[in-house]
Each structure stands twice: as structure tokens, then as C-alpha cells.
Length: 89
Image: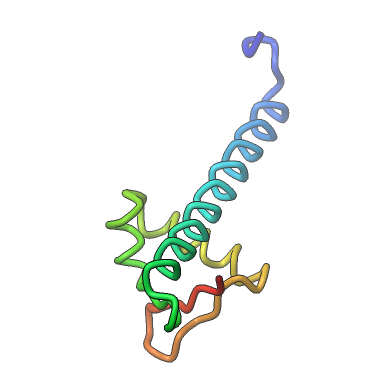
């Protein structure tokens, strides 16, 4: 059926898929934050993009986009140290 799709429909489908992947990665970052917080309940969860790349096996640009999505949702904030993020649990 994809053969009969218009270019516009294909582009919309690809954008929808990227959005779902971004949402999934953002959810994984939130799950990671909850897991770390359960192990260390007394402190804040602060991670770098590099830590998340290694932990989740994703590209740095994808992790950065997911963190920006979480920032808009006020689930993270940038830490004073460049490249680090405080994850709200």
C-alpha cells in the first residue's frame, strides 16, 4: 500500500514515526531517572548527555532532542555544569 501513498503522506508518516521514537526515548530517560532515584533516594538525579548515550545506546543528538522535549514538559532542568541535566522524579 505504501506504493500508492503520496509524498506528503509518506513525509507525514515519517514525522509521526520520529515523534513516537522521540517520545519513547524521553520515557526511557524518565524510567532511568526513577531507577537511579530508587537506588539513591536521598539525592538528585544529575546526568550528562554522554551518560545517557552510553546507558541507552542512542545517538547524542537523539538524547539531546529527548531531553529538550522533557525540558518543555518541565520534567528536567539544565544543571549549572554544561552538558548536565537534573532529572525530576
